[in-house]
Image (tube, rainbow, N blue to C red):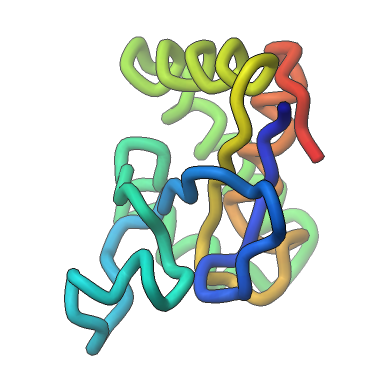
Length: 128
C-alpha cells in the first residue's frame, strides 16, 4: 500500500487507488461528472492546496529564492490544525491503503505537490 504523488489529468497507474485533487479550483471546462473518468481526481480536496495568494506567488517564482519563500509560506499554511491533521491521517492511511494526491502542474519540482510529498514523508508516509 502506498501514497503516490501525481499530475492530475495524467493516465492512472495500475493500483493507484483513489485520486485526491489538492487544488484550489476544479479543472476548467471539465464537467464534474467527468473529473474521475478523465483521470483528474475522484475527490476534490482544496484544503491541502495553497491559498490563492500563495498560488500567485508560486506561479511568479522565477528564482530559487522566490520558490524557497513560497515553500516556507506553504509549509506555514500546512502547519495549521486542519491541514496538519489531514496530513497525519494521509500518512497513516498510506501504510494500509493505496491512494494518490496531486495537482495540475507539469513540473513537480515547482509545484506544491513536491512540498506535500516531503510533508507526508516527514510524517512517515509510504510515498512512491
